[in-house]
Image (cartoon, rainbow, N blue to C red; front, side, top):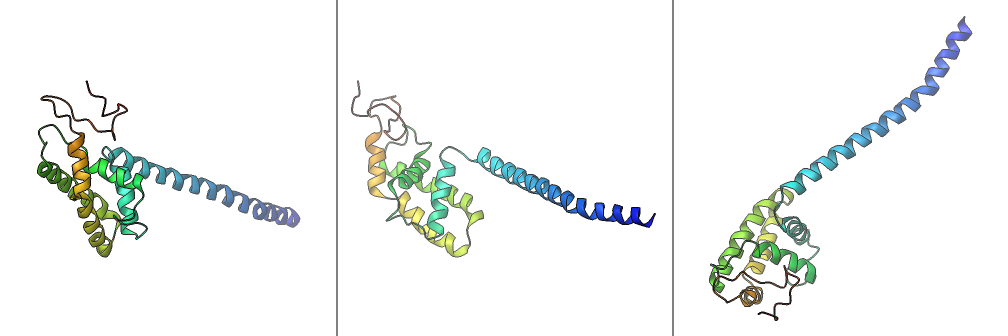
Length: 166
């Protein structure tokens, strides 16, 4: 009888780690599932071009890049976000700049959750520099369709060659 009890204890001891391992896998799976839900919720909450702009701004805050030496694709990502929502009523460079500055403040609010105070200061300076960049503003201004009632044309958001206008 005692041998049977010892054998049962031994069997329990052998099977216990297996149960713990399988429980660990399901816990990891649940953690990954929760993480995926958080990421998915974030991505569903961001606006047009916002995820890329946040990514670039976090890189700026972390010191991985700056507005002076960032890759061209990253600069385009930030500019797309800053220019999003412009319309034909905003045809002057002053109006374009005002829109871009306003969008930069929205982006700063959005990124504030992911950076500390020092990073936020650095990021604010960099983002403002990009928002008021004369070269970028002039490019937006020059890509507007000048015809009355025409839609804004930008080579950044269309596949149509902007020089081939009817």
